[in-house]
Length: 426
Ligand code: AMP
Ligand code: GLY
Image (cartoon, rainbow, N blue to C red; front, side, top):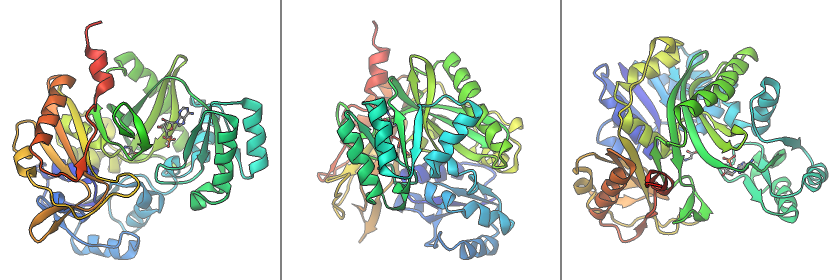
């Protein structure tokens, strides 16, 4: 088979690495890719916004499957265009991608199909949003409706902060994403991410992951795209997983099919495990980054037939197998991330780190300049380890990081702390 992967992050490096291991693979392309991806796939500079030229590339290179990594091309209808051109694509079409592209769409779906989520109101003007906030009190959560690159959410501890967030949304702080706001109940509990592979009808659980969104140790500082992750999160026990599938995932699959927008691709549920049970915070319609890296480190079988079965609506025949190992990834970021990461510094020692047993170093924002690896983005490398338990996986990941010589880079030193606490004898 010939496969094209779209994206350039650590998530796509992990996808490319796993697909490259498939005996079914003939040729692997990635656009735009990064230097780590370039070592295992042919990278091409294609304009993914130009659907006609992308389809032409696929026809010319006889691509059998396109795997779309990030959300923007999914919400932008790339999968619709590829399918219209007769090209098989893994990922939701534009109608199904509304699960991530519009928070109000998802909230309305939850209401209609009885999917547990925070109580909410949707507003297209500030006075009504503020009246709702005053009526409900704080803490309360204000969200810009559309895609805001993970920045459109304010968890407000008092009414004034919530009202200011409403003003910021309507004043255009999040561009078009802020034309409508969702105001919702603050959920108490522990947050986990839960992933499923979906074919429009069937959803197969891929398991739970916990991310670390804040930039600093102890979950302090600014929000980021994710500073590290591990899988599985043992707080999601077998009975909890069964509840999540039965109360949240399957009703979503059935609801989407019922409204004529069957969901095919990766369904990524951000959940709060509240005292009343699991509740949906949000959906994403793709693998998380860096959650994908830890999920794929534990997958024992070939990824490629699973992606094809999902795209072809044949997942009822598939059964992924997982290692008993824990996987943990630590993100190395460039100084200044997330506000103003500084580009261009030289990174040495990646090969030494990657040569250690049970370690993969996935590239995200890297570049090659004059034969040397340099930082070219905020999140730069994902040092990912497998171990018999979380303590071992974490020790291996940090030992590998010791081999990387990059004074202008930093990482959190406490990735996995929740799970490490849970594993301690009581
Ligand atoms: P989102 O972009 O919707 O994932 O929101 C970003 C973060 O805000 C989430 O990961 C949660 O930590 C937090 N958050 C969002 N909605 C709620 C809620 N209703 N209650 C508590 N925390 C929330
Ligand atoms: N790590 C969070 C995300 O990919 O959305």
